[in-house]
Length: 449
Image (cartoon, rainbow, N blue to C red; front, side):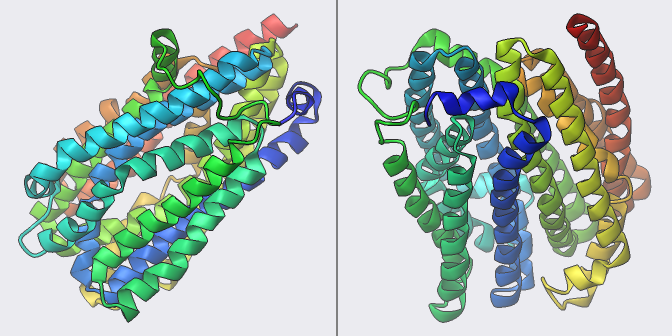
């Protein structure tokens, strides 16, 4: 990226900038979520309906891996955006080198920590004797390729912040395309079952990682691999981890929440209920990823203008992103409330599983439009490096509201109590987030005037 290409973040039309940066991210995130959806469909149709339950049991680890990955990726990408706004290109490159090293270390750490105790961990996550074989076969391969996964997601976050949203999108699409082509071959042709799905995932990330290395090795770009950027700097690492602490805690709490949900469903409804939650989770994920794409488009614009002191532009891009996110969430609400069967039949034809998933889907999406607002508002504080507030907002939904609901409501309402906990937490946390954001924005408008 040439230096002049970053200047447009400070003076270009906000609507056009958000479109330019969000559309590639939305396409990439949607494609990624559609892969996860089709992956579950292939497993449900080509392996066994209980394999969906085994796959669901692995979600807590995915959340934990995402927690570490987002801590480095989002923390570094936010810091890069701010440094580019301050025209500190030397430090921006050091961030790139530190991101690479940190992701390698984290990937190795998670593999070494989980692989020797995999069965114990999966049983704790909610596996049963009927589903442990599927969960184990899937997780062994995912853990062995964990370093690749962390590097892939970390470098993609850097590319977006460095002004390459289209390139980041193309790389994600490459991964999705390889995945979608190879997965059915591994499952249906080679007969590798759920292991084939895991192998396809790692293989697709290896291909995309190779493309990232090629792109980030070009010297004409402001951000590129070079000598002297790989030694970890204590202050720089601290800043990356500090800014990324909010998404880390959010995903770490999500890990705990998924454990509570899967264990609760297993206790009150068995493996069928766990599989139903996995199906609903994949559908929710599609719309959440679109909103995350909007957030990723907003992040470099907000971060650059915050670093440059253009607070009115930060407010403007945040307001526009909130409107777009609420629109997406409302679409998700309408589709899932009106046409649940059309979606769920893609996964399975098992009657009991379909009945439970339909019931849960309609409950989870009942207040979904406000989720779009809550996600953007939390991301706003991350984008400008205000990690304490972002951490507070992230934890209100999950720790202060959702976890107590998951612990109390199932005692009285059993399975229904688990499903209801999600929209209850969404509603209350959105009210808190609105009060905090509007108060902050009002203060900014006074400063801008």
